[in-house]
Amino acid sequence: MSTVEPAGVTVVDASSNRESASYVDWSAIIAGIVFASAISLLFISFGSAVGLSFTDFNARDDAPGILVGIAAATWLLWVQVSSLMAGGYLTGRLRRRHFDANEDESDLRDGAHGLIVWAGATVLGAIIALGGVGAAVGTAGAALSTATTAASNVAEGEGATLDPNAYFADMLYRSEQPAAGGPAEARAEAGRILARAAAGDGTVPEEDRTYLVSSVAANTGLPPEEAQARVDQVMTQVDQARQQAAEAARIARNTAIIGAFLIAASTLISAIGAYWAAQKGGNHRDNNTVFADVFKRF
Image 1 (cartoon, helix red, strand yellow):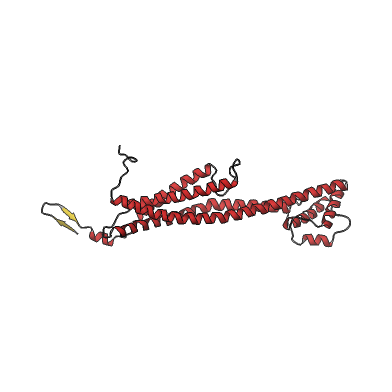
Image 2 (tube, rainbow, N blue to C red; image 1 turned 90 degrees about the horizontal axis):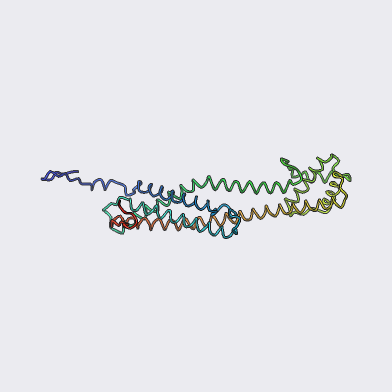
């Protein structure tokens, strides 16, 4: 309502508007979320440019992976906490205070606004990250699958489909004359033998090794000694490929565990930081605090 004073000055009573208004200042919250997300995106992009990538600890060839991992984790923690503190402070500073609350209640409401900024920015960051991290995880999974497939089909050729029972069928119809179907059939049968070794512990039974030596000698014209050396060399390569695939899978699994723990810890710390920063921004708002040495009027 409004009243007209004798001097002709109109005085507006805003108490009724305050009572009907919500205590949640969404415009200030949205501003804080946008500000925090922009800062986070900026510094994460900068960290990735200098090799602080949490999805690839071997991004820098001249640095040990463990050091890159520690640096990337520290950088991620600092970026997440500092960006959300900045967004929380901005929201607390911009929030329209309701003067029906005492100082403690006002601080609580400022901090609650900071928590909402933290929640919104975290959800938005997770949605954005699903594209990049998901693509990186998919690429890593494809690489591991390719390595395993290559180890399993090292002598079988690209695009071959491995029947899990083909190896045992070969044993049923194996004769003294290796690979009667010619080089193509010999390569396919050798590929099934090597695939079974790659899927297991990397070893080939002695009878299969003897058969491979005779098959290589029959289809390549090599002397038995050279055929034996070639089989041994290929078996060593198959075992190395299997070990590399297993090591890559172990590293990926451990990295995922450490990454999940780090993200959970940094998210919790950033929530506390956003709450405190929003309260600090509200206090500066109430006290009309300015930073004259930093932000000067021109």
